[in-house]
Length: 327
Image (cartoon, rainbow, N blue to C red; front, side, top):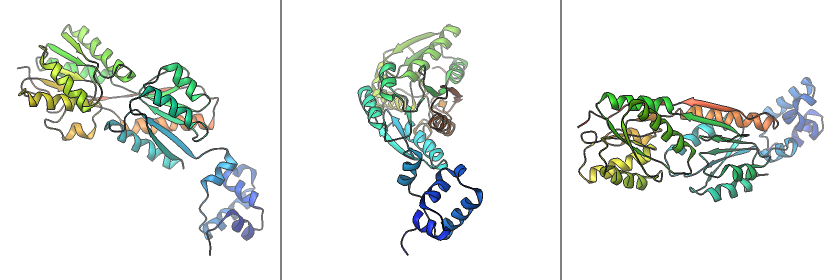
């Protein structure tokens, strides 16, 4: 026997192919008795619904896009996995797109996605607000780790966790700190910098700001070199990848961590747990972040006129081995 189709199911049940299609895609238009007969026949014939055929009926692609600024950053594979798991549970495929840290590329890609996907999750987008809104048009979109008016967003709020990191370092005797800033176009970098500044002002400690640096290992090496030229005994790095570059640069220059300097990262990617010394950091709730973003996007796909919503999930301070008493 060949592969089962809606026509073979229709012949088995004595109904039209259109009725079979409605039984799968618009069940409210089919009587319960007929729908049960169709579903029973589909099970007997081992029928696998065609996503293309379903799209013709529902007007949906059955696919969502996930746009990330840099797939080589270890933060984003964790997000991809969390989003994909949720998308799979609701029967949607996932298209992954890498913008390669280019705001212009982001805008072009979002434009190209219109008509090809049902909606987009844009993770840490770098594009100017107006350009991103124009590119999205009527396409449902949810931002992760960035907020914009008139767009839904899901962010990891690290403010309290960064305050906890500061108090941890203060308790270890540190009084002079460095802020190793992330990319200037990154909303998350700005928010993290604000949190560190607020904590430093409240504690009355010295804070030198260095950067911005790219959120890469190489950017971290550059940040580490800049850190050595300051009196700071403890540093807040924008993220874990940058922090690992800082650790490597300090080690190459004979600077001990945590003996001479203490370093704090952010995000708690796998690299933070495997590097030596293990990185003190802020842990992001990656599974919840991806799941929530996908759930919010699904609501907008199903109800395009629904008002935008903003969700905030807290980060958690996680002390490890890269922080110690002041020298």
